[in-house]
Length: 291
Image (cartoon, rainbow, N blue to C red; front, side, top):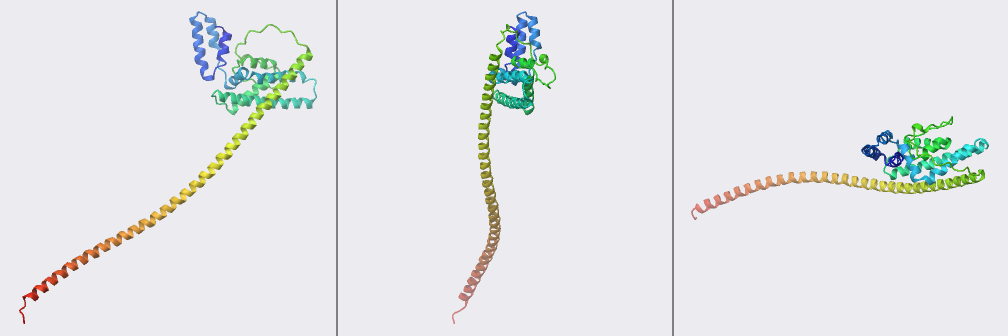
């Protein structure tokens, strides 16, 4: 186990796993008797969210971010030789590419289950702009080990020492390419960056179309639901009115029933009294002698 191995592992992890894995690797190094390595591992800092996104871009979307970094090299070379109008056009293209790559990073973050706020996205764009403006910042981004965002105001180089974990050992020097071949290679990288940026834009537009269709469908369903709710409330109001009328009718019928019961009871009493009178009259008549 080396510091490079541990750093490569840690800065590829999701943010929630960083501390636990770092502690485990530190303990492994101590158990192996390598206190220097354990101290170096302990010193590794957890990346900010924007730095984590940048690290994942270089690890998982290298084919998209490398052409962007190559564009930065080309812009730095051309700044002194192109017209102000051409430089403005290149700068506008840079902003479009940075925005496209940043949106791809947000999508990558969501795929990994991370919440990417607008503030984090802006910090990521600042880091990409810094990588375009300064070669040291570009190398810090390429390391895949950023621990914080980078900023570049256009005055001198960005110092990535506080923004990147220990870098890998430098590779052996590569023979300098022929200038024409190098420019052709960068032109191809720029062309590829434009193609990929257009693909990102096309996917974003397709997503917008789907989102708008879903929005319209949801709005139509909402309007339908509101209409059904209004109809249901109207029915409830009518039922309440009908219930009030029915309760009034029931009260009136109950009142009439009570009056009818009293009348029936009185009639029954009168009938009993009349029957008693008839019986008494018959008895008196039967007691009278025949003429």
